[in-house]
Image (cartoon, rainbow, N blue to C red):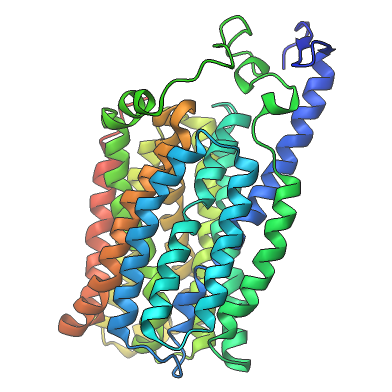
Length: 444
């Protein structure tokens, strides 16, 4: 913040100096960042437990039922993600995330006690509704507290919560599955999430203005207080929707790109352990560890694109997304060829090396979650601060429609043409995602 800036007037009609405001901003930014990371990572404890549970030989439901269940979950989650985003833009994010987490945990707890496929599927659908309240809260909070010069980096840091939550449930869930039963995969994480929801309510806050601080635009010198609209003037939802969502063609291009990103991401998310177990004759623990490596690589990918695009191309994030998606298609294609197509013993021995195998899975995760981070970030930026949560929710809605296709599409492809065809579908969708990211190259 530049020197010599006049004191800021607070809502209590007294004044805070620039140094006081800077200290408070720094404190709350750090507090909100780690709160959002823990909070959104917790949603994965009661979401990805489903993909782990179905690897158990004692899981009572068929693969087809699982596929349909996952598709229904993805579609409901995707639709409600936009709805939740629209509501969150006009709500208090401090309460929105904890309520969603607590209700999703309750649905997961009931699912772990179900004995019928109908009851289990119903709880998955209910869980999907409340799961959708997680990321819109993150989008709203970040765009309220961080300006464009550092939003990408902070978005990448908080986006690491995807991988943190996934790694925790993949490794912890594999242990629960081997030592106990699949039901514990739903019961234990639910209890943990209840406690975290209470902690989140104490940690989170909504906007800087709610704490008597200036808006982020004023704090970072992008606007003066005189330029800011009155706090009591609020546009209607339909006005915001029309101006920032419906006719925002840049946002829709990002949504289509995100569809292809999520086809690959949800393919590995839902069917990764199964593909590994069936094509490489690996146990549940080995399969879980390999997907955990993919998630760890994804963590680095999200951090990288946030830092890199903030520093070198803050208004051209699509360039990075296009290159990463095309490279992802190349890496998946090479892995498929070397593990399934080429039958040479030397290549097989080389690919069986733990170092090489780990490298491929880590690079794949890096290249999946980099564009996934850029999809939500670009959507929020194109949607503007007024509709950031709704815009990010819309990209997620379109993305999870791809998840719905994956849920029934991948096992169907595998049944008729084998898992090789599933790998080919991931290669094709990766390249298509790169093409649509490239269409945003000249869009600021």
